[in-house]
Length: 290
Picture 1: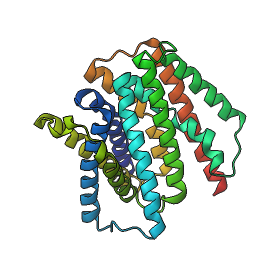
Picture 2: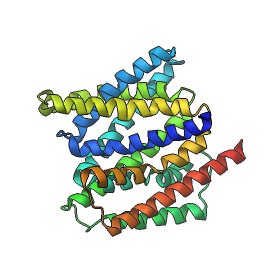
Picture 3: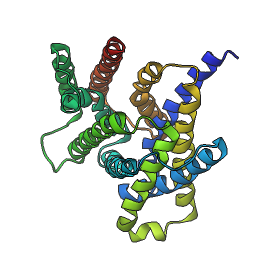
C-alpha cells in the first residue's frame, strides 16, 4: 500500500483509539483520579519501552526543560482527571463534545502567549461554541449531573488549551513520544498520593482495563502519530483529530447504548464545526508566518 494512504489510515485509527478513551470512564469502576493514575502508569511504561527500542534517549536537553516537563505533566494530570470526571457526571458523548471546545478556547487565550489579535471570525466561532454548549446543558443548576459534567468538561478543555500552548512554545522540540513520556510520568507521580483505597483492592478485570487504556488507547496512538507524520503534514493530523468527538459519540452509542438526544447532537455539530474551522484557520496563519 502507498505509504501516504497507509499513514492516513493510521491517523484515523489513532483518532478512533483516542476517541475510545472516554468509554473507560463508564466501564472502569473507579473514580476519575484513579482511572487517570492507572492510565498514566501503564502509558508511561509502554512509551518508555517504545523509546528504548527506537533508540531515543529519555534524557532532556537542558535543565530548565525538566521544569517545563513538571508544569506540563501537572496540567496533563488535571486535564485527564477532569476529562474522565466530566464523562462520569454527564455521559461519554456529552463529555467528549464539551472537551472539544478547546480549539476555540485556545484561539481566545492565544494572545496571552503570542503577538496575535482576535478577528471577527474567532468571535463568531466562540458564539457557535457557546450555543453548542448551551444545547448540552439540560438546566442551569449544579444539582443536575449533566450540567456539572459539561462544566467540568469545559474546565478540562481550558487545561488542555493551556497545556498545548505551553507545549508548543517550550517543549515542541522533542518528539511526541518523548514529550508524552515525561508528561505522563509527572502526571502519575502527582496523582499517586491521591489514589483511593478502591484502586488497591481493584479486581483483575479492572486492572486489565487500566492496562488496555494505558497501552492500546494511550501509548499506542501517540506512537502511531509519530510514524504517520513521517509521510503526512501536521496539518493533516490536526484536521483528522477534529473527528475525535464524532468517533467518541459513535462508539458510545454503539458500545454503551447511549442516546445523546437531538439537542446534544446539534450542539456537538456546532462545537465540532467551530473546532474544525479554527484548526484550518490556525494552519493558514502558520503558513503565512513561515
